Picture 1 (cartoon, rainbow, N blue to C red):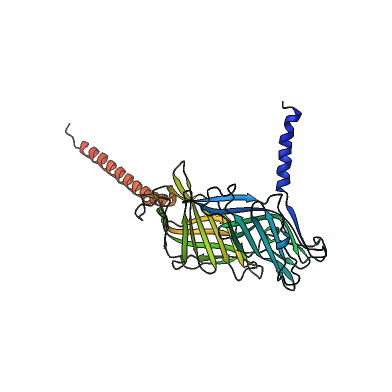
Picture 2: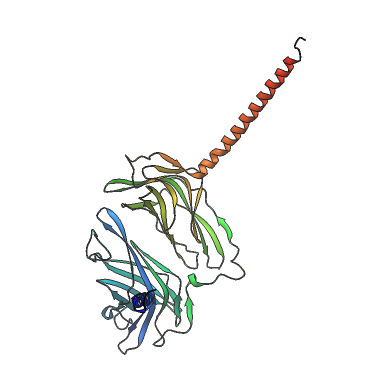
Length: 407
C-alpha cells in the first residue's frame, strides 16, 4: 500500500490536468475599463506541416497561460472598424477573433491563427521556419444582447489547420460588464424534438456520377492513383425548418490537388461551392493502406446554416495491401457522420506506392466477391443436378439389362 506522501504528486498532477482542461476567460475593455467582449472556451489546434518529404500533424491545446494581447485587441471605438479579441500564448502563437453586427445579431466574422514553425516542441523538423497565419470565417453568431453558448465542438477549418472550440461562452457588444443571462445556443447543442425529426423530403438524387480519374504526385513520384465516381448524400435543415437529404455528384470537371507524405496521402476535390478532402493512411505493421479521413466544407444556400462542415478521421474503408490496388464495381456507402454519407461507384484506388503510374495487382471488395458467389452457386447446383440425373440413368440402365439375363 502506497504511503500518503506518495499519493500527493499524483493528486497534484490530476488537479493540474483538471485546471488545464477548464475553459479560460478572456476580456477586452475600453478606455474606461468597461468590458465590451467576454469569452470563455477551451481550444485545440490540429496543424498539418511538412517535415522534409513527410507530412506531419501537430496537436496543441490552448494553455492556461494564454492571455489577452491588449495592443491587438479593441472594442471597435474611434478608428477601429470592428471589435477584436486577440489571445497570445506560447512562443509566437496568436488566436484572433473579429466581430461584426447588424440590427439583430452579432457574429465572429473572422478567426485568425498564427503559429510558429520554429517551435521545435510542436513542429519538430519542420521544413519551414518562422510564423505562419491562416484564417477563416465562422458560424459563431448570436442575438444582440444575448450570450453565445456552445458546449459541443465548434470546428473551424483553415487551410492546413483545424481549430476546435468547446464549452464556449462568448459575447460581444456587451450591454453590461458581464455575460447576459439570456443565451443563443449553437445548433450542435439543440436537443432532438421529442416527437421525432420532421419527415424528410424525398432525396433529390441526380443521375449516377461519372467516373473521375485522379493522379497525385510528390517529390518521389506518384503516391495516389484513383479512378472512381463520387456522390455526397447530405442531410440538413432548410430555412423553412424541413429536413431534406440531397445528393450531389462530384464531377470530372472539378479541380483537384493533393499531397504525398510517408504516413498520409491527401486528395482535395472541389469547386467554388465545396471542397471534399479524402485522407489515406497506412498501417506500417500490416502494410495496408485505407481511407481514414473525409472532410467536407460546402455552401448550401437554402439551409438555415448555409456553411456546411463535417468530418471523420477514424474511418477504415477502401483497404488493400500497399503496392496493390483496391477495386470495387459495386456501389459502396461510407458513413461519415449523421449529416454525410459518401457513395463510391466503380472505384479502383492505390495509395503510397504506385509503380510507373499504373495500378498494381487487384484486391477486390467483399461485395464483388459475394456477387460472384451467386453464379458459382447456381452453376454448382446445376452441375449437381446433372450428375444426379446421370447416375439415376446409369442405375436404371443397369437394372434394365439385368432383367434380360438368361437363366
